[in-house]
Image 1 (cartoon, rainbow, N blue to C red):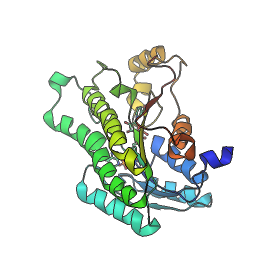
Image 2 (image 1 turned 45 degrees about the horizontal axis):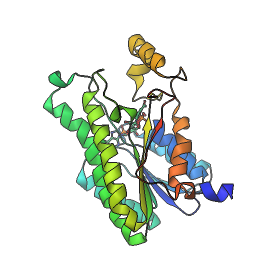
Image 3 (image 1 turned 90 degrees about the horizontal axis):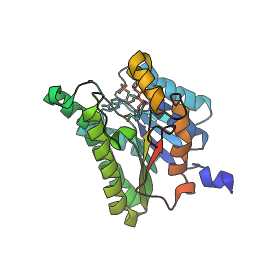
Image 4 (image 1 turned 90 degrees about the vertical axis):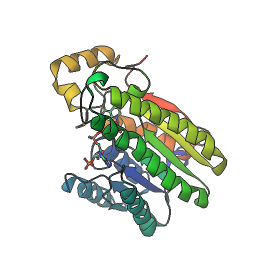
Amino acid sequence: MFEKLFSLQGKVALITGGSRGIGQSIALAFAEAGAKLVVSSRNKRPPELEKVVEQIRGMGGEAIAIPAHVGKKEDVRNLVQGALKQFGRIDILVNNAGANPVLSTMVDLEEEAFEKVLEVNLKGAFLMSKTVANEMIKQGGGRIINISSISGLRARADKTGAYCISKAALNMMTQVMAKELAQHNILVNAIAPGSIKTEFSRVNWTDPERKEQRIREIEIRRFGEPEEVVGLALFLASEASSFVTGEIIRVDGGQTI
Ligand SMILES: NC(=O)c1ccc[n+]([C@@H]2O[C@H](COP(=O)([O-])OP(=O)(O)OC[C@H]3O[C@@H](n4cnc5c(N)ncnc54)[C@H](OP(=O)(O)O)[C@@H]3O)[C@@H](O)[C@H]2O)c1
């Protein structure tokens, strides 16, 4: 019963931003649970994406890497078509690619930087979800998991305003799409991590002032590790969550209690 609930045997999962951090951890866990993997990122650091594929193959799993910028329509089309060509279907989509390239108050934020954040965090997830959901509808169902953030649930005045706004919109997109797609047996949920120690959040665990502030906020009094997001992702991808949709679930060590 337990194994069947969490097994991803025979499933095909596509993970954006799968080259490192939270996306990499989810990719490895899904492969261990039996899924075939398509891992993607812009591949800014080429060995990273290939390394994840090699790790999965080393575990006896099946995986391919397809580079794509999630904000670019043509890249998204190539990615989804490449996945379908290789594996014939996509059962699980994890919209994990995310960016927060600048730290700025809203009044000082350049228009281009605002657009960049929305392009990756919101439009990217939209383009991916729309394209993959159309395939899932033909297949008869699927799972979409958006990696959001607690920053989308609570306003912060720490120069991450555009990021907060993009994740708040992603949360609403999760719920709108959950409502629209339930009739097609597609479940759409979001994970809202708190402070997880990755490349992306480096400034928060290296800048002494920001680090101290975070630790003070987190009830567990430490940053989370990427592997600590995996359990929830596996739950949302598997049979265990068959009656769960439209949820935004926090993994934040109590940071927003
Ligand atoms: N770490 C945290 O504290 C934290 C907290 C809450 C939410 N999150 C969310 O968790 C997700 C993963 O973050 P992480 O912390 O694991 O960051 P990370 O270690 O920096 O990984 C980010 C991944 O996204 C890819 N990526 C970036 N821009 C992309 C684009 N335009 N198109 C496709 N791929 C792109 C990166 O690869 P390339 O550079 O090669 O493209 C990389 O694989 C993000 O959505 C982030 O907002 C993180």
